Image 1: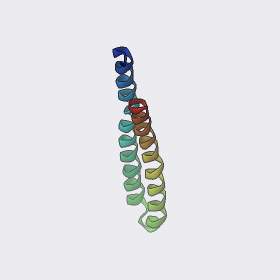
Image 2 (image 1 turned 180 degrees about the horizontal axis):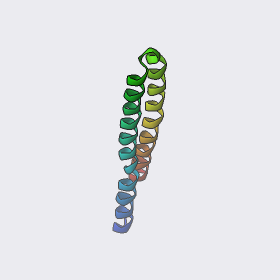
Image 3 (image 1 turned 90 degrees about the vertical axis):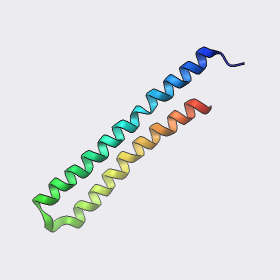
Length: 77
């Protein structure tokens, strides 16, 4: 039988690990907001700016997915 304190600690640790998802959501908003500002200043380099925006999105989302993975690892292992 699993101790109640261990279960509470697991749930608390998983909740803290999901805070990374809030940061990832904010980061994605910042990346695409900055993309729109840069695009409005210089329309002619749209393709290059879009590549940088997608790279920033992928790296930011990877951090959020790592946080989600850690939450699942804490809960189920």
